[in-house]
Length: 372
Image 1 (tube, one colour):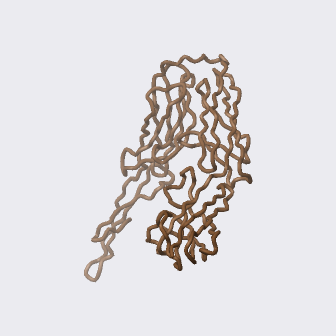
Image 2: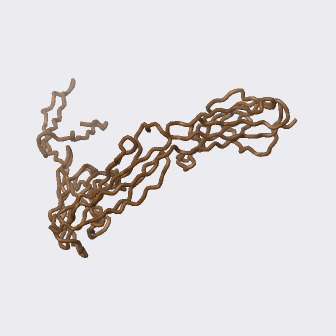
Image 3: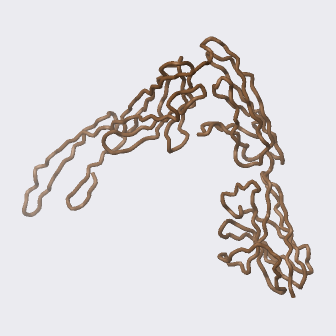
């Protein structure tokens, strides 16, 4: 019971309903009286509170199943009472397994709801039954998706037909994002992947775009590591198992680069300037800031990804580095060096990044001219 004020109340059901799909809610209205009135006779009112009926809606990536497969999406909505939907898992099963199958069932994102892959085996009527189990406030529901399969020319059941796997080479890559293998079976049946180097890489499943290869974390020691993946296909009642195929590639440390900048002060809102042929006045202190970036561009839009570098003067007669520290500015965390200009000439500062387990060492030399 929710008090809305001014003598108004709202009756709210308590979910999940326990013990039954429908329960009886009894509300008692009472008035205790006061110095002028006796207490009023209480009045009871009852109402039925039921779980909401639901409906499974189906959409597909293509209207007709193919041997390679199409996606079937199932979303559940309520058809009465409080409008809502559900991404809760449903079950999917083929009622016509000689015509079509459904597999790879799962929830791959929060937008599309549960998804399954329907693959055609023979021409005819394909029927996929989808069951929503219900919840604390939803009734279960079911539906059957029907499509007519045409154009299938594959071998009949019992053929034990041979099949092969085509597994394209995977280019060597830097540590970071995973990679999607692109193996396909001549039968159009789904390919299964297995890492033969589990200390280096593993297979991630239940991804919207299919299985992916990812490096083990934390990364094993070594600058360049070889990942080997096997692609296989077990066959079905029409095709024999395919000979497995492997691919190997090298996962190396990510290359880095350093970009020097300068600023007239250490105030955060002062815009950083690129190093140019501009002369810098002697007997002044300047702040030089450098960004450290992936060469692959995987920086999430940042200008500096936060590694603190070293800064060493190789011309101590002309300039010295007095302090090196982190500088949190718009665009990322930079490294700031406080440099003391001593006399006219060329000041050379070597910036260095020592590297990490997954990122290569890097260095650059910054030369600036000191005027009189």
